[in-house]
Image (tube, rainbow, N blue to C red):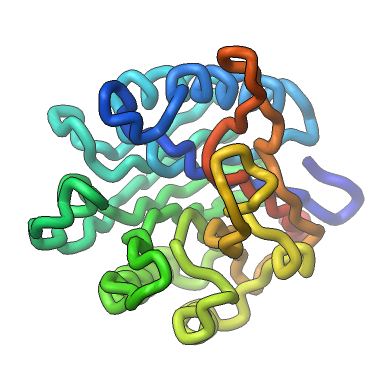
Length: 282
């Protein structure tokens, strides 16, 4: 979207909570929630002010990747290894052409007795990078990741150091690949301003990157979500390189659907939208 002298770009990040359900009940009502997410994507894709690009995480299952790739957006980048049952879980959707896609796969976590509890060793956490060809802005790079989760439940965070290393390698890789070109970077980082030590790494690795003031006031893991009992801070982020200006941010994918007579949210995360502006390329 453009106005006099400025181009506006809207980006959504969403962790869809796409774990297989079945007898394990890991992510209840996944199929219905994916259909609900698809409807929201179709609505946004049909509107001029809808998201220009979407970064999804935890789209673990092949059938969900296929379904969400057909939800109104013309361009899709899926770098998952098809034979794997669960790989990176990352997916890009865009109004505009996507090119030069690449992937950074983080070192595999060791298998230990907690594998049934947290499952991190069963998936291939990664970072994905793609070039969006915007009709007015030209080349805008997008980077999406899902870092290792937090499972300590109030005790010591056993994956803290791994998450820190993943973030540093992701940020360094993306900046090196992109060079001095415009970059929008986001995803489910599993940390936020409520984790001050890791937040300092964000400032070190992404100097000058911008985000809206609204982002400091909201949580994407919210007690207002039907699948959450308490607020847990905002772990889902979208930042932009200094080429951009912030035009605001807001919670997204907050609508509920009805399942078995009860209203439920589309994921255990709320989505997050950031609006950026860029000078019109002459």
